Length: 246
Ligand code: IPE
Ligand code: IPE
Ligand code: MG
Image 1 (cartoon, rainbow, N blue to C red):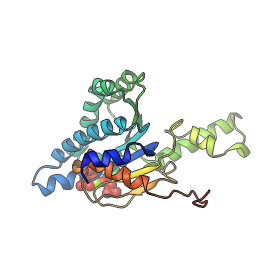
Image 2 (image 1 turned 120 degrees about the horizontal axis):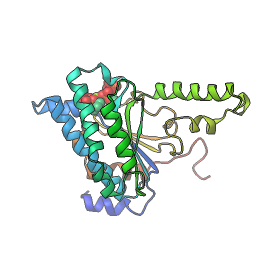
Image 3 (image 1 turned 45 degrees about the horizontal axis):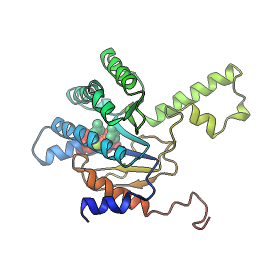
Image 4 (image 1 turned 90 degrees about the vertical axis):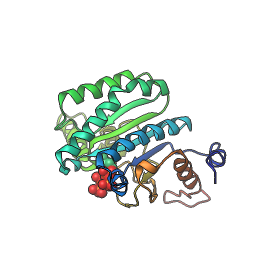
């Protein structure tokens, strides 16, 4: 189907509330073309901007993107530096997000980040704080297990301070102590590149997400591919353990 036909097909149907992307395959995209991996990351960054813009235009309220995992520190120093710089650049370009009315949020830890980068992140988040369109959540230096450790520590501290009783710990208390406090659960998770794994992304938040694994590399995932994905999402039957007719 053509891009405009796909758009007409999906535009008036239910959009995901929170769409999440594991943007994978930048390195392989570059390798296939005989280019250095960093060129793949550069293309990937442009794709991220395009997809954020398109999700915002579709009226999707929340979009998450996994841009650097707590495990990605294992990569060669040069690549790690490049990925750090790419996030810094996105933050320094916050005006672009403001123009699109996109609000930026970053989840993850500050461990091992330079002060420069932390400042750039804080500034970008502040600059976009009054935007009322989509919230773009970058999972940067993020690990799902680390998020749970931090969550358990926060709740344990509240128990110790007698602010929370053990018997009162429920889903709501856990959600209020995750990095994603006040952000609804992921209902649609897309991982590009054909890999079908979660790689420590949003472990709690994807409990009931629909999963989609297109076999293309992230730099090739454009707005048309987004529309195809959403068309697929709109045709899924979500039962949440109940029955269809309920
Ligand atoms: C995803 O692409 C980007 C990040 C992990 C930051 P990769 O760099 O993982 O690309 P492949 O998987 O090696 O192709
Ligand atoms: C997951 O991709 C992390 C990000 C997209 C930031 P990876 O390429 O790092 O994951 P693995 O190593 O294939 O599991
Ligand atoms: Mg990868």
